[in-house]
Length: 338
Image (tube, rainbow, N blue to C red; front, top):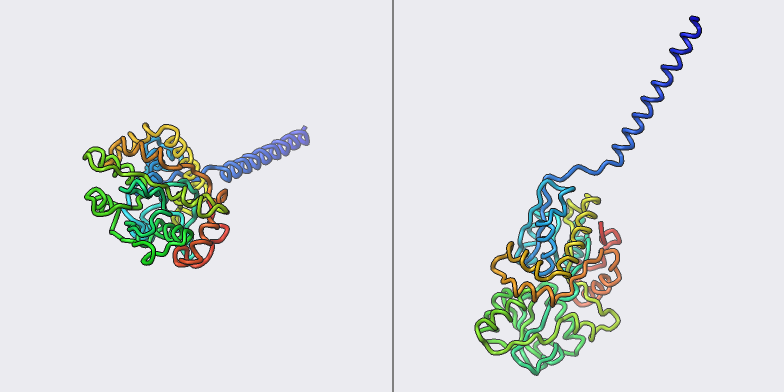
């Protein structure tokens, strides 16, 4: 009887030990697969342009509720201001021109490009109905409000492809920003200007409200690029990037990229609803102008790794004549996506 009791006790101890071990392994397994803790705040940023509209929808729709206690959006006015915000670690994810994250990465900041969403946002606007495109600018003046930024670099490449040289075949006139450019065109002091959406739609709307002389969307830079560079017709102009600190949070970066793509599809599918949402955040932009700007923009968010070939084609072209625009070389493979 005593031996039997001892055996029962030993068996009980063994079963308890195995149960405890199983619980411990289960706990470790659950802990290892647990979702990362929610961020206290995720800080989004972008300009007052179509590339930022999906970010505003993410804000309103609670797209990141599983990943953050609070989501904020900050408006920036120009790439120089964006560089300061990134250097000060004041934002986590931002809309940006496609060359800027490459430049920062090659200067030692471990930022990542998450996606490209804008493939056509720049337009040549003219008072002259005979100006049908960039090739018709010979002997004329073009107003550029983006002296050192990607739009100006793209225009330089486009003019070069058409055999046009600034100062010889046409005059390039630089102004501080798009507001100055719009004011000069509305005042009749210039005839041709390059603008980014929604500035184009806003300009045409204002001109119509004022009863001004007709203005024309002469040509999108995307269409002109397709003609000039048939071997690389797609022009990845802007998208979403992660700051150096946010790029280390891989799961969060993936979630932000997916949420942005979903919101971009929503904006493209329902421009009017997107315009009304944007107007609530940016009341100085009329709904009609925002609606028109979405319809005139090719908004198609794709992961950066999926469009690496298009990006590298653009980076090589920019690097040939303006190596400082991308930091002198192509980014490393890890740069493309979370």
